[in-house]
Image (cartoon, rainbow, N blue to C red; front, side, top):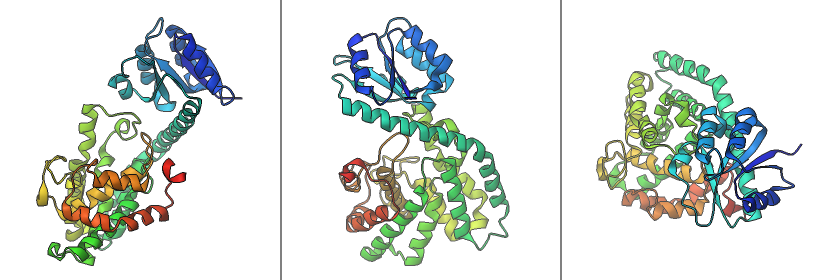
Length: 371
C-alpha cells in the first residue's frame, strides 16, 4: 500500500499541482478545509508519511492545526512542510519552533517536491527511532554514568578508558551524533600536532596533544543533563531553549568536578578547559563567558575548530551535511566564528588530513560530493 501524504490548502491549483507531482510515489490525500484536516490528523495522524500545510485555509487555521499536531507529538513523528504562495509573507518562526521542517513556495517543481518528501520522511523515521531507542536506553545509560563516577579508585589509572566510556554515553544520549566524539578526537589530534610543529612558542608536545585529544571526548558531556525535548528537537530552538542548550558547558564542568580524582589531574584540567571554553571565539563573540584572544586555552581553541568542522560535514536531524570543501571554505571565510590566526594557518596546512579522516570514517558524503 502506498504511503499517504496529506496536502492541506484551500487553493485548488496548489492541491492539484502537488497531487500530480506526488502521484506514483505516494497516495495524496487532498484537504481543502482546516477543520477536516485537524480532525483527520487528531484521529489518524500516524497514518500519514508527510503533511503539506498552508497557513491561510478555510475553517480552522494552519497555525491551529500545527499547534494541535505539535501538542499531540505528530510533528516529532512525521515531517510537516509549509506551503507559501509567490506573494505570501515568510513562514513565521513560531512554526519552526513547533516542528515545521521545510517550506515550499510556488512555482513548485516535481523533482524538488519529491526529493524533499523523500529526505524529510527519512529524517523523521530516524528521529522516531532515536526517541524509541532513547526511551529504552536512557535509564540504563544514566545508571552506567553513576557507576563510573563511583568507581574512582578502581579506574584511577585508566583515564583514557573512562573518558571514552563517558564520551560514548554522550553519543547514546544524543543519538543523532553517531561517532561525533571519536571524529572530534581525531581532528583534535591532527590539528594539535600541526600546531606543535609550526608554533614551538605554544610549547605543545605529542604527549600534551594526546591528552587534549583524549579529553576532547568530554567536550559535550554536559548534554547528559539536558532534557530530551531540546537534545532531540528537529526544528529551530527558541531563545529560551538555546540558553538551556548553551548551559551544557557549565553543566559539563560540574560533572567533571565530581570525577576529577578519577581521571587524574592532567586529564581533568584539559577536559575542564575544553568543556568550558570550546564554544568561545577569538573575537569574544562566543559563549559562555565571551572570553577572547589568547585568554581562551589552546586546548579549547583546537577542539572548538574540530567540533565546528565535524558539525558541518555531518548530517543532523535538522540539516544536511556539507561537502568537505564547503566546510573548509565556511571556516576560512569566518562563517562559523573567528578562530586565532595560528589555528587558521594550521587548519589550512592540515586540510588534506581532515578530509582523509572524513573519508576514513565512512561518513555519508554531502550531495555535491556525490556528483
